[in-house]
Amino acid sequence: MKPGTLAIVLSVAILGPPMLGVTRPADAQPVPSPSPSPQPSDPCAGPGRLLATANRPTIGFSACAVKAGTAVFELGYQNQVTGTVSAGSIQSQVPQNFLRLGIVPRFELDVIGPNYEKTSTYTNGMVNTVTSGVTDSGLGLKSELPPGSKWTVAFDGLYTGPNGSKFLTAGNATFTGNFDASFAMSAAMSIGTTIAVSSTGGYANHSHGKYGVTTPSLVVTAQIPNYYQFYAEYVFVSKVALDRGGRAFTDFGIQKLLGSRTELDIEYGHAFTGIPALKFSYIGAGLVVQLR
Image 1 (cartoon, rainbow, N blue to C red):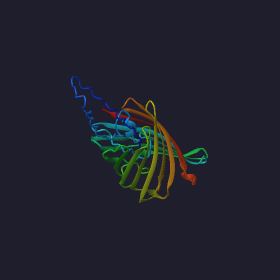
Image 2 (cartoon, one colour; image 1 turned 120 degrees about the horizontal axis):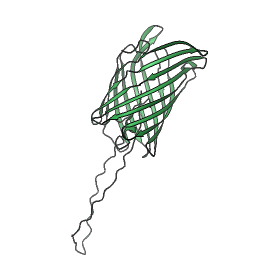
Image 3 (cartoon, helix red, strand yellow; image 1 turned 90 degrees about the horizontal axis):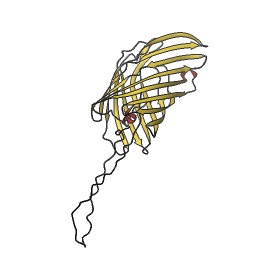
Image 4 (cartoon, rainbow, N blue to C red; image 1 turned 120 degrees about the vertical axis):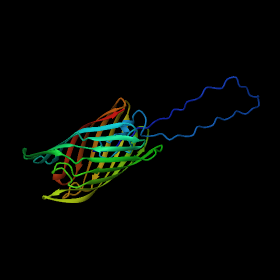
């Protein structure tokens, strides 16, 4: 799973000491000091870097690659209720593992999963079935373009193999390409997007098939003092399963940076759909830890 979030670095101009013991003729014109060349700030750097770098807990990905020579673990728990009060399912996921390795500046390699998932179906309050297993695992990479003063742009490539439990696997290799972009509206607020295009697969009526998915998302983040960050995200999934159509939903959350290498978050998501079987809401919590 998942995204998103930015920190802005403020530049501080340092004045050099005045020159002593130098006299000028009375009619001499003052010599103007050369202006320093403007240096664009890096929205992905600074003491709040981890808030800008973490994909958790949004669906979209951050446009910031992790710092070179570091490893970032993104972990979480999610509990989701799908359907209606009379008929639906309860699904829990843990640890939502996403390991990110900074190889060189603005380039990372990723390890996706494994992720354990348990699903209980129910009718009129009575549990019908309980299934559990692991989702597909794989690898990924991110390439971040050189930063501008306000814009950050990156590209992700993700691959997972058909190595999960049968009721959770796509049944074939899944390839995803992401375009990530973010814009710093102010020192405290930013807006970002991820446009993901995937080739995946699934099972319906005991048969397997492949299909494509497009997942655009839009997220707004706002920082307040003491390294708290709020976010709100809108997501649209063009196809949620082999035999099902699209679905839109929103998620909201708060993140807290502890020191410079640990981030905690909590989140809530809710789907917008007129189809009762596709309605869902979820709550989640997560941890992001940077080594070194």
